[in-house]
Length: 409
Image (tube, rainbow, N blue to C red; front, side, top):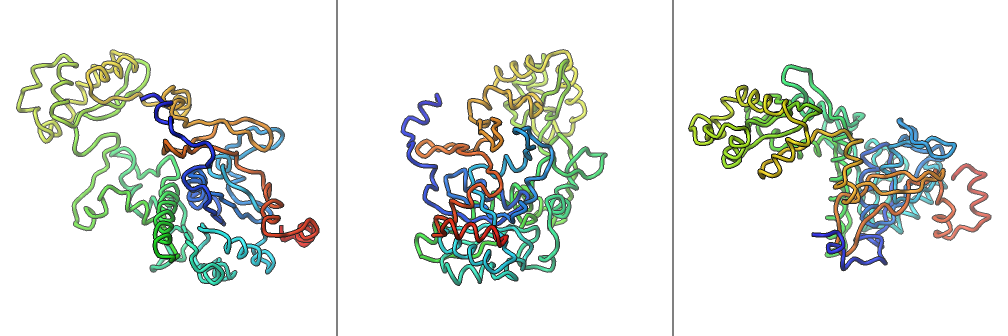
């Protein structure tokens, strides 16, 4: 299908499928902002509330050149499509404004430690008092209840405690965390997904609710059933780039790089045998089933390694593709950024930053044929929309000046 055919009935008058939905976000770093980012990408009007000093993500390296001021890659990525309002929530006036915004919002997203916003009168109970049907999403390390709910919770801690790190890395190496903020990303995604489910429930019943998303729970949910195996005492082994249920399947060195290649299906094994010039193995019962091939893993890895090392990555990938069996080049992110397929899928979209630089920002994953999503605006400068948001609440120019002089915004 051509891209133009997929989008032939697309509307241009909406921000996305969540056009008209208002989200109030009080978050920092990555998990909470990711929840808001997903909702913003889907078209919601997300107002991100930050302390006047700004939130942590604005100061995380590496930095992207943007005029005279450095721009954090984290802020540029996870806070696009949002509006920025500075507000001191430690004071009574700031909290009053926050509650006024909550009263006019559909969803509230926060990722403070449990109890923090309650102490400020801005927890679920406080917000529910002014907006009974609010959908209140709390994203934390370990959740709102449980023996360790009040512990500091960060992405690598969830990776360690969930069991993920224990299985990540090479078989003979130490536990290894993911290269990305995996628990944060999944926590943010589950927060956004749950908010949409709660929104659908509210449309049917008029009921709002509190949603409790823990990084630990999110990572355990996405553990491919390993938590169940652990509960049953079934041992799990670290497999590196291999799989417990497939062989050959591994990363193999070519003359100019690496590929990931392998087979799971018996029918694919027969094709691979012919491709490798070992057609006699295709019908050999000693290799014909998955269990049999797993028992010969070392032998099959050696066979694949010798075949690949004599060829370029492009040659291996092309031959596998022509044969209809799986293989992919092991790319760097720089390689992926230059991939024509990635570009055609709009996974990089130009956005003009506050300092004037045009930076390619990672685009939304899901594609909507009727209500397309996109990077509509760059991550805003701190407080860029403070005046506009407060004017929407009815504040005058004199009010804004007074709030600034009092340090509220």
